[in-house]
Image (tube, rainbow, N blue to C red; front, side, top):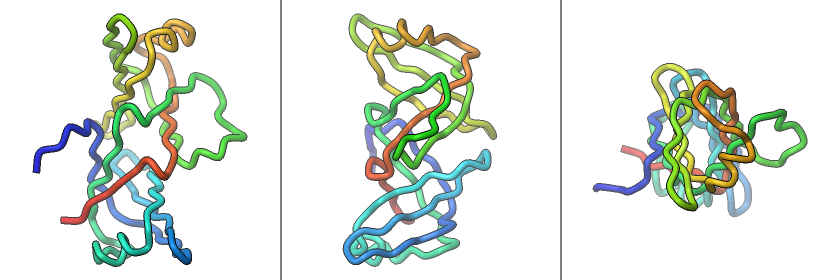
Length: 140
């Protein structure tokens, strides 16, 4: 299957917290960081995954925000630290690439105004912010 989703990370499930309807799944990705996905318990059961399972995490670039300063006090579970390596700007929107370590990159689509206001450029230390409800995953 070919997908238009730019951000794909192969990782290992490190934790599953079950709820009545929804659960959270911790996914360790290369570079030592962890993604948290919030999905239905039905999806977890249908995929047949458990701690130690290999999965592919998927995140649309439009579901990612970028911060340049402290991110304490936010309910957002996924705060991936990295170095901005490229900014490609058009009239209204920009695409930024962030190196997360271990050869992993994440791409965020943000407004050009945000790029200008945050003074984003190569070398900037940033945090990619992703709500856990915006992280999907598939099992092989």
